Amino acid sequence: MDKNQLREAVLQKAAEKVNPAGEKYLSISVAAVGELACLHDLAGRWVEIAALESEVIPERYQRSIGSLGLEGQKKLLASSIGVVGAGGLGGFALELLGRMGVGKLVIIDGDNFSESNLNRQLLATESTIGQSKAFEAARRISEINSSLEVEVHHCRGERSNMSSIFSSCHLVLDCLDNLPSRFELEEVCGQLGLAMVHGAIAGFIGQLAVIRSERPLLSLIYGNVRESGASQGVEVKLGNPAFTPAMLAAYQAGEAVKLLAGLEGVLPADKMMVIDMQSGSSYLVEVGGQNN
Image (cartoon, helix red, strand yellow):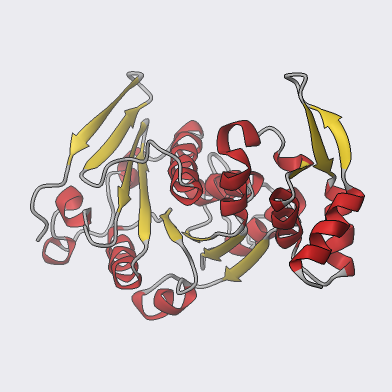
């Protein structure tokens, strides 16, 4: 089936609706998207892209279109994001990206859930203890948005495997919890020409940076990890209450969506945002300077 035929099929399934502002629009339901995807052996996201190209709004994204526009939503559905870590930050970020309709999610995490994850990790429940974080994330996404494609790698993300795993991605989220792996990920993203949305949390505080491939920032933020021998940040001492990863993951997902959808307001390449939930303050820190 070519694009024109798929668009015609979408239009046949479309129904007129009225949005909360009283405006009429053409809509296609989750069930209709699934039916067409199954009938034509396609991932649902391609049916949804065809719908948007015909100015038909997939109903699951109706409340996002006002912010993203049809073109922005289409760009998200055509995009692929890599997420390293499906725990505290990653679990929440994947949930949000799935609901926003990022077309393909590539997940790396070699850990299984433990009881200590229950205080803060969205996917950690008493019934998932001992289960793979990456596979539980994929299961959750499939329940939220069956139109998306999910690729799971139940392994530790390392320099040796991340280059090939993320070769078809447009962007990567750093949801890691140790410094050496973060530096390896930054190096891989530099080699692949990918932006990396860095997030880190400790206690009530989160930090966020959008690291461009040509401007590595981690050594400016953390110093030289290889020389110092440091592997963990202050997170080990301070831990994380439930709301800190949820807050910062929302910021990470927001930056990713802005980048992929071509929206304004992405964090500058030489700035890091710090959010302190205890004091209720947030501020930008200059971290650009001369990269080494």
